[in-house]
Every structure is written in structure tokens, then in C-alpha cells.
Amino acid sequence: MKTIKAIFALTALVAAISHAQAAAVLDQDSATVNMDIGRYASLTGLDDFRLTTNDPDGSAGAVYSGNDQFDLESNAQVRVSLEGGDLSNGKDSVSTAYDMDGNGIVFETAADSVHDGKHVVSASAKLGAISAQKAGAYSSKITLTVSAL
Image (cartoon, rainbow, N blue to C red):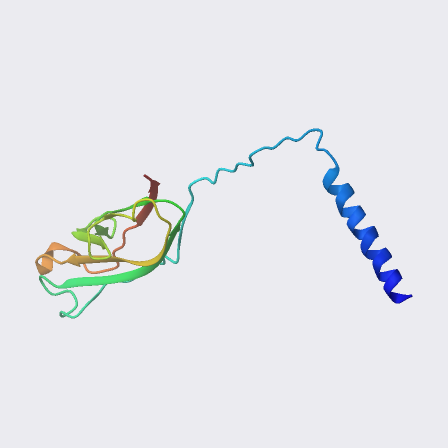
């Protein structure tokens, strides 16, 4: 009896499969799904930083330096440029040099790739003669700009 039920179930299954395979496709269409992702970049982690010296503070020719780290993430090749002026107290100024990653004030990420990395911005200022700049607080603003290539 079990054998007959199994044969009957198998026959029904084969018939259902045969019927499904025999069904003719009457119509069919297809489409391609597309998406464009825009270029995007993010700079984070850049903070104010102080320049300090190992020379006697305020002495002629003393070199002050400092740096800060920032993160750059992009989904395409980008160029990062740094702008900054001399440190000043409003009236007097001290010649100031800037650098990113030890390679100048502009860098580009690798072509045809994404980027996620840490970078360093540095500044250094060298005093002139003792009487060339007034004692006190000096500052300057820097700006990092990310551009698509």
C-alpha cells in the first residue's frame, strides 16, 4: 500500500513538472538597472595647534614648529591644497612655512582609486632679530581644500 501511494505521489510530481516545462513563454522583457555615485570627500580631525621652539624663546633666529594630523577619505582621486599666511599679532608678522606630509602644500591621491588615510599638516616660523618682532601672541588661519580631479 505504501508503495502504491509513493508511486502515485511520484507520478503526480512528474506530471506537475512536465506541465510546468511545457508552458510556453508568451512574452518577456528585461531592463538594465543603473546608478551613478557622485564624487565625495571628507576632511576630519584638523584642530588648532601651537608652534613651540627648542631655542631660547624669543631669541634671534629661533625656529618654532608644530603639526596636527587630519583624516582624508574620498571615493575618487582628489587634490588637497593648503593655504596659510604668516603668523601675526595684528601689526608684526613672522615668516611662516607650511607643509603636508613633508611634501609641500599640495598633494594628490592615487588615480582611479578610493582613499582613506591619515595625513600631517606642519608649520614652522623663524624669528628675525630680537627687535624684528614684538613679544606676544601670534596666529594665522590655515585652510585645506579638497578638489576633484
